Image (cartoon, rainbow, N blue to C red; front, side, top):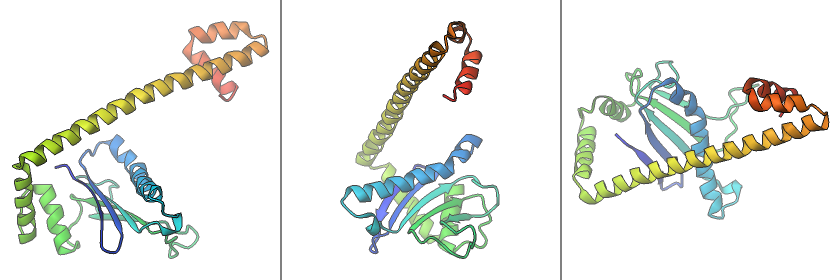
Length: 215
């Protein structure tokens, strides 16, 4: 299942929700900062519309995970900014990040939320709500226009990732050149020609020199 939702309700609250199905160690490690990135994108989008920061909407970043992202067994993990010296005191900046866990203990979950998480986990609709949802999902899959738009979106995502990888490599190479040039300049100023030659042939030695000059 692919789910990426960005909506605004009648109270001007923003909701950004997406599925997370990769439960590998690397993806779990990145989830907190991924949620921070999404929050930043919501705020940036609002500011670009001309709003002052004081008018930023209440917003929710929601990840629906088919794995336990924090290993506590909860069906829901909710994060808001709290004061470390008094955790009963919240910052009240209007931002909330929620991680749902389809494999958590769902017994205490509200009924419709429990039904939704169970449906995502099993793909078996049991209630009126999830049966209606399942019907809409199947209907959407049979919609040729929707399928074309979906494939276009997938290709766009792939192209953007490829472009990002290429740009990242190019930026990395340029940054590497600048570091080496600076190192060589500093070594030359100290007349350490032998170190310049050795560092060009020995990556580990070059790394030690970077640490020595705190580059």
